[in-house]
Length: 117
Image (spheres, rainbow, N blue to C red):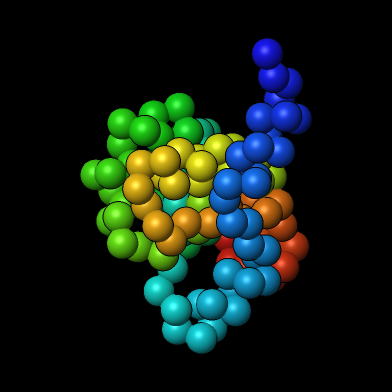
């Protein structure tokens, strides 16, 4: 039996995390980044990062392959950076090679000066 903190720590050990500043820097350098929002539709309707692909965590495994190319440079985000850790771990398991979770989620993105609509 494992606790949520144990599951989170294990998943973080298998994935790469990036900060919003690192993502903004990648974009500024012209690096193609596919942002994937794993929040639920009500959250997305309140605020989103322009151009992000929406694949809710509740349907993630069954929908992601149709919306995100396997060879894409993927950065997943949620509200605070927890669901995106598990989604990144799932993509890693599914064979996606260039995947990261954005630490702090959309809240940290906005705090770092990232555009939100």
